[in-house]
Length: 370
Image (cartoon, rainbow, N blue to C red; front, side, top):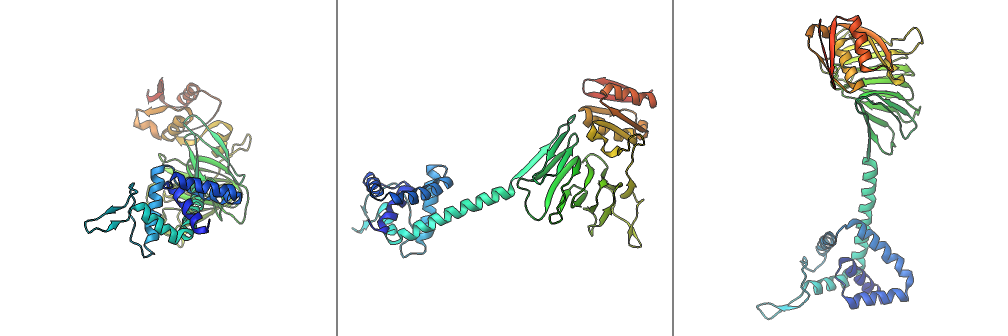
């Protein structure tokens, strides 16, 4: 059997056009030439991996033959199920699709098979690369829960309640990127050749290796970054010139999410324009722990925060809805730290130091004036 016939039989088999005698001929050839089995199995594996159904297989093969015929002298082929020769009105014989297919395959058997194999194999490789590069991992926490994640590079992330991070599955490339919604504490493995960037709606945080906390909830007014050690570069997403700010250990940057634009005087960003504020992390005197990261130790902390701000924390911490019926109470501020306390215990403590009453009905907490 010459090579043209060999490729013709393979092509007929792949397309589902081979008749029983042709399948028997191919089988007999393979028995006499067992070394050719690997080549056929490879072509069939490539073909089958791209063609999930018989109908799709025929359609793909026909489209390929259509393209191939455009480069030859034969007209574009139309494939049907008929396998007989018919006469037209002029007494001439119309060549059946199968006969035309045979003729074309005799002319271009080797080329067609090689082009088809290469085309399909290349598509498979490309699809695998795209799938690998585009695969995304998302880790999220519900209200009332927290989680710890180790990224592919060894960096560790603690997720607070109602938070989500998304990152590429392979975490390869010149930049390590993470998208954050909510609050997370990052302890990033240092790699000077591959910066680590956290994207939020208001800021991008770029580091090489450090520990810091980022708080960026959509329903809150501000996005906060608190640096524990190392250094970070903050890019203000909404700044026209993408203003950059470098933080040092114990620095805390607060950026307004939805209000105003940055104001500069003498080339410096104003720190009191209600858009940007640079503060120091608040450390507790007793144990020198940062209030901004106490949630990692399962401690609910408020640091001179308004009741309106506290309500959002309580909602996420205990998975409840907190309703402040009296508008005047929203701006009252509180400072407190609670460890392993129930919702009732927290509300009792706040009520004792504030001028309000509260009631709990299933998952609804209502605060009203006295």
